Amino acid sequence: MRPFQDEAKHTLQFYSGWRLALHRSYSLLATGRYFLQRNRYPLFSYSPKHGLPRTLKIGHEIGLRKIPRLDGAYFPALTMPHYPSRAYDRMVANGGLNCAAAGTAMKQQIDTAILAVTRRCDLHCQHCYERFNIGAKDSVPVERWKEVVRDLQRIGTNVIVLSGGEPMLRYPALLELLEGANKNLSDFHLHTSGHGVTLERALELRRAGLMAAAVGLDDVVPERHDDLRGHPGSFSEAVNALKVFHEAGVFTYVNVCATRELVRSGDLWRYFELVKSLNVGFIQLLEPRPCGGYFADGEDALLTQEDRRAVMKFFVEGNSKKRFRDYPIIYYVAFTESPAQMGCMMGGLSHFTIDSMGNVNPCVFLPVTFGNVMEEDFTTIYERMRKAVPRPLHTECPSLSLSATLKDRKHKGQRVPIHYDSVRSEWETMYRVSKN
Image 1 (cartoon, helix red, strand yellow):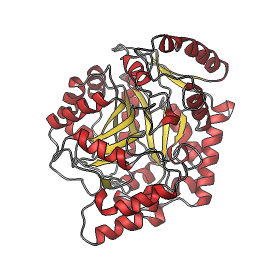
Image 2 (cartoon, helix red, strand yellow; image 1 turned 60 degrees about the horizontal axis):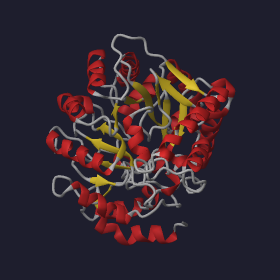
Image 3 (cartoon, helix red, strand yellow; image 1 turned 90 degrees about the vertical axis):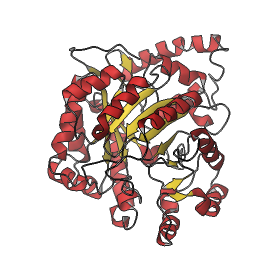
Image 4 (cartoon, one colour; image 1 turned 180 degrees about the horizontal axis):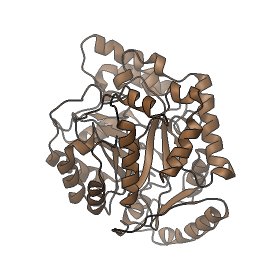
C-alpha cells in the first residue's frame, strides 16, 4: 500500500501517448522479475493467447488507453490493485493478469468482490439494486464481514469494495473493517452516494487503508440527479465527497447510471467536463438493468439501440481523441462484458457480490443467490457458484435474458434474490446456447 501523505497536495496525472508507451516499456522490463521468480509467480505468463500480451490487447479494446497516477500509485483498471504494491504482486502470482483465461486454472484470482456492508440508506434511488434489502437494521454483523474478507483474501481478491446501502451510515463498522484487513493482499474501495462524507472522515478512512472511493454521480444537472436519487441535495453531497476524498489523497472515480434522460439530453459531454474538474480517474458507466428499483416495471428505463449508439460514441471518442488525454477513462461495463468482447464475467470469473442480507449473488444486477453467509460457510457457497459459472457467457446479459423468469418466481411468492435452484434449468440453458 502506498504511504499515506497527510496535509499534502495530491496531484492526479494521466499517462497517455508517448508517456504511456515509455511507462509500459519500463513496466514490461520490470515484469522480468515475475518471469525469473517462477516459484513465487507460477501463473505469470507471456502467452499471446491468455497472458500479459493478450491482457494488454483487451485493455486497449475496452478503452484502457491511459493510466491514472496519484501520489506515485498507478491505477491500471478498477478491477486491479494499484501498483507498485504487494497486492498487485499477489494478483500476478494468482494469475490475475491472465484476463482471457477466466474460468481456467490459469486465473485463480477474483478481480472484484462487492460487499454491501449495510442495509441502511437515507436516499431513495430509482435504480437501486439493493431495493429489496434496504432497512433500518443490519443483518450481517461486522465480525462476520471480517471473516468473509479473510476468506476472500485467502482465495485471492484484487479489490474488495465496501458498499451498501450507504456504507457511511455504518461508519464505525466500516472503519473497523478497514483497520482489521490486510491491505497487502487486496486494495479496498468504497462505493458511496457521498451522504455523510466529510474531510475528517475521508482522512480517517485513508489512514485506515482505503485506496479508492467511487461516488454515485448520475447527472450533470443537479435537479435530474436529485430526482433519480430521491433525495434533495444529493448532487451537492456527491460533488463534495469527490472533492474531499481527493483532498484526503484517496483515488476517486464515479459510478454513473446512463439514464435515457442523460443520454438523450446530450449532456454526457458536459458530465465529462464536470468530473474532469473534480479530479476523477475513471467513469464507471453503467446501463440501467431490470433489477432492484427497476425489477418489476423498469422496461421504460432501459436504453434503446439508438441510446447505446450515443453512449458508444461518447465512450470511443472520450477514450481516444487527443484533446481528452487528461480526462477520466470511460469504463463502459456493458461493452466490456458484451458477447463480442470479454463476455459476462459474473460469479467470480471477474466479479460477484454479497448483498446486505448476506446473499452471495453472481452480479449486483442479477438477483440470483447461491447461498447466505449467515447460514453457510462462504467458501462452500463460492465453490457452488463457481461450478454454475464455468466460463464467460457470450450471450445477452443474464439480467436481461433471465428477467421474465425471475419476475415469474417472485410473482409465485419467492423472495428476491431468487435461489439458484429455482432457475437452474434456465441457467443451464444459457450456457448451452453460449458460444465458447
